Length: 144
Image (cartoon, rainbow, N blue to C red):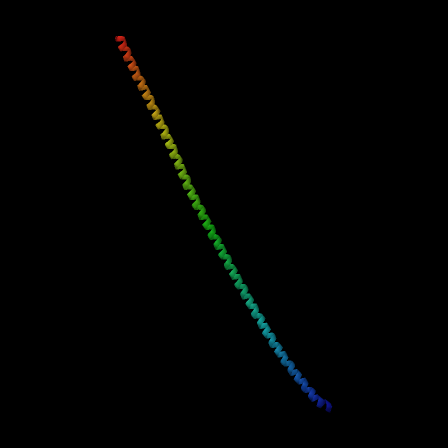
């Protein structure tokens, strides 16, 4: 027993030292685990913030893209409306030009008819004058 006491005291001191060291290592391990858990929570929070930020950016881009598409659709619709309006104006001008051409053709036809009528009257007048001249010559010839 004395050996035990002598050795035991030393063994007991070693056990106490080992228990103390084990307790100290357990505390260090627990502190490391708490830090690791805190770091994991912080990383998870960062990840969630980044996901939320990414979602927000994605939604912003989607909305911007939708707005751009809408602006392009509106611009296209305005361009089509302007083109249709211009086409209507051109068609109206073409119809007016066709009417003017028809009116000019009618006036030309009337003028040609008037010229033809005048020629006919002139021929008839000339024929009547020639008949009168011929009649006058016959009377003169009969009178001699």
